[in-house]
Amino acid sequence: MLTCPKCQAGLEKRSSDNGIFWHCTSCDGRAATLPLLRRSVQPEFLRALWVSANQGTSAAHCRCPFCNRPMAEVPATGVSGEFFLDVCTSCHLVWFDLQEFQALPQKPPPTVEAELPADAREKLALLKVECIRERAESGWEGHGAAPAEWWQWLPAVLGMPVETASAATRIRPWATWGLAILIAAISILAFFDLENAVERFGLIPAQYGRYGG
Image (cartoon, rainbow, N blue to C red; front, side):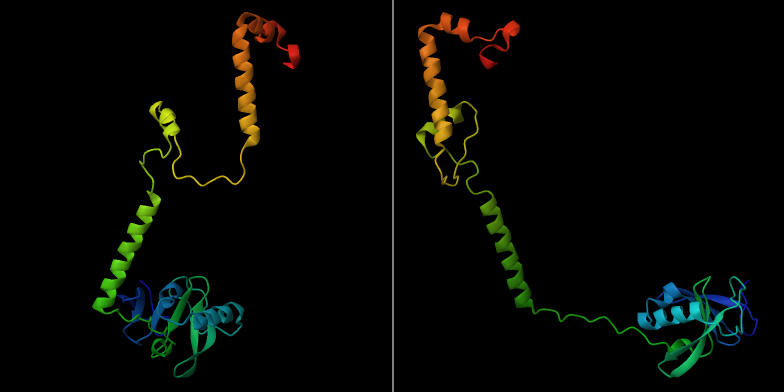
């Protein structure tokens, strides 16, 4: 059983909105961990308290109810002036004498944003719906549309992809067009003497390096 470090009476486990602490019914002292205190006490106060506890050399007046090690006596300034707190750096525990816990500087309450009027909320909802509709239309624009040019129907019928509503090219692909015309012309000429063309330019595995490969 945990005992009070001041009067040696038994400590009772209590629960609050912020968590669990231990209370002495005899002297009205209490022990609370730093994680519990961080939920309600100003962080600057706890930071300074922890630094002073690790650097303090003051004589210990009580022992930690958990590990029984000497606790550091640290000066602190609360809402009612200066007082001394007992801190165990091993257990991250703070002991509060009578009325010391109530003197801690509390965090400011969270700011609550003013709720919008009903008509403003309705307009905001309609605006969000309109934005979603516009994004959906812009994302699907042109999807499923038929080819714009007659010559695009041929690859479309053959199952090949056809780009629609594409941006106009800034530079004409003369090199690509020229290479395609050259290949087509050579292929057409080869058909007039196909046997000789195949014999001269056909791929022979044993002579893969002829004509430069």
